[in-house]
Image: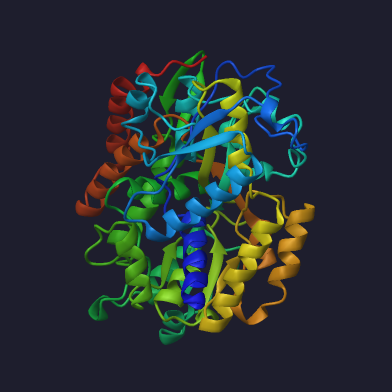
Length: 476
């Protein structure tokens, strides 16, 4: 029973910290009226004065009923929090962020006191003033300078921070070295280019055996998310903001080059799966089955721990540069915790205390140790080196590194040379998910039609997206 309980805690921690996809599904909001607030929402250290602290009631974003491990984890955190902050009463709210529902929730004042949102929602939430300015709370927060500034960008405006990063990623390429060896194809190096990527994908593909050189997402929003990495590598961007207006930019010369490149992979290299209409799960399942030599993302843990692959057979490289010496730029994304601006300053402070409750603390190190011990017992691995909410050179970052060093056989580390080359550009700032969906439609047409006119498709999509979506967004 004791081991079962321990495993449940570990599973819960993982469930809450895992990056599921570029489209992240959780979110957070908050702000208005918090500026200049001195409310702390904290109980007095002295028992005889604790009763003088005003009672506060706040809602906590709670897991759905089918997330058993998540419920266990959050329930324990709520209990620990209420023990420290005796004046705060926590209530559960199992609403999970949805771009289609946030407006309704805010209008009805039904959003939780804090919630988690993907990076794509930053500008939308800021423009609608659905985020609390965290400046009043960060002023007295001892770790305010320890957050990873690579991740805070999507929720910063005019030097102010509007969200706490929960987790993050910079897109990379995961490689099955066994499939390269099977075709006597040399492994690429970290400074590889699009030409190197194309040759590797073409040569490792074996259509007769159902093996793809490169499996790319092309079904649903994740198709646009995957393709955007090539757009960024070509020096392009998804959107431009000028004179208070937002317009699509993915139909630029860089966008055309990026779409022509994946078209070449499909039709000239014959490097993609015969059934190319794959979603997030499809792609990684194909990889675990040994039917794709390369995919975007670093799902090392899933491949080894759930797919039975050997960590020595796997490799992570940065997104290839378009040309030799160019930048290895990929999508930078993640999930963020934000505070509801419709709450009183006292509730907002309590929400900030809750969101940061376990950050930079010994409890985080204890959870990490439990995970590493469990991986060791099962012969599993832990992926270390992806962007985290803390700076790697912070005191907490150093403590994490020291702990990880104790488990060399159960940790898969990013190659330092790879990390050095990786550059990230945030996801589309405005209506990101809708932008990805529009791009996925172009991708599908290109993969289905050998004679597809890439420029015409991108131009038509940009025009339609601007007229129907971006023209309605107010920029201040």
